Length: 103
Image 1 (cartoon, rainbow, N blue to C red):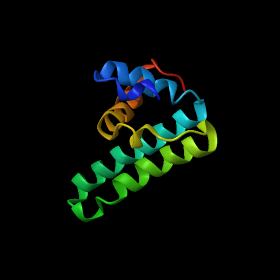
Image 2 (image 1 turned 135 degrees about the horizontal axis):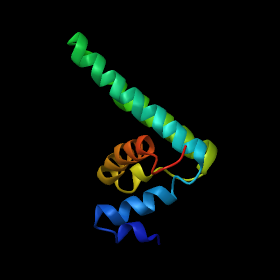
Image 3 (image 1 turned 90 degrees about the horizontal axis):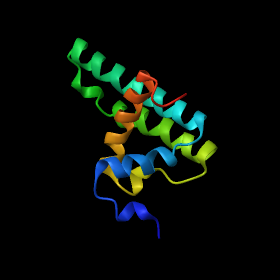
Image 4 (image 1 turned 90 degrees about the vertical axis):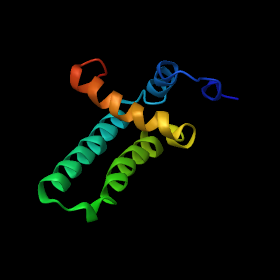
């Protein structure tokens, strides 16, 4: 049994999350998907079109899951800890922008 089930603090989960995203190509795909999510949110606000909300999970998850299937060869953390995983996607995105996580 994996240790992720016992982890209750986000900081502990995030360390697990980073290990599950050790392949640079997977991290790149996560970055692209999260960037597209921000672009869609910006477009929704600018155009006042809330009817395209369904593109958010489509873009965000499709890039991430392809990264896991093709490069990491593991199941996305979304299936294990959905809330922490979503937060971790955004934290990793900003950590990449700050240079704390390499792509």
